Length: 140
Image (tube, rainbow, N blue to C red; front, side):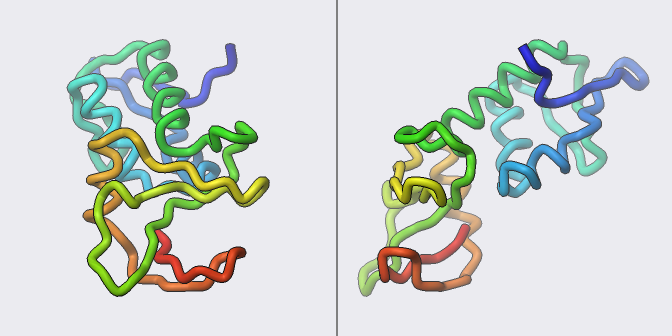
């Protein structure tokens, strides 16, 4: 199986060497992946991509795959070219209305991971645009 996140050990702590590149490729803010790693593995990842503890390559990769499953991969076409969005309307947006929109097949998948939906909801970037369906959305 291919390694997604590369790690090295420095002073008995794991450093994720390609975290920023990985997040850029997935088009997700590093904050989302770092928080997900924190929740899943019980460790913190600082601004230098250093983990608060020593974690195995297998654990980091498993966590990256879970993150992609819950927050990146389109459930319809299984591609990773997606954007996190929320519907914009006259009423207040709810956490349950956070979804990712596939740029390949245009399928919309709700973010079902409660903590990731909450994190995305708290960090909505107020960039409103009209999507492919003519609906007004906010990019997260």
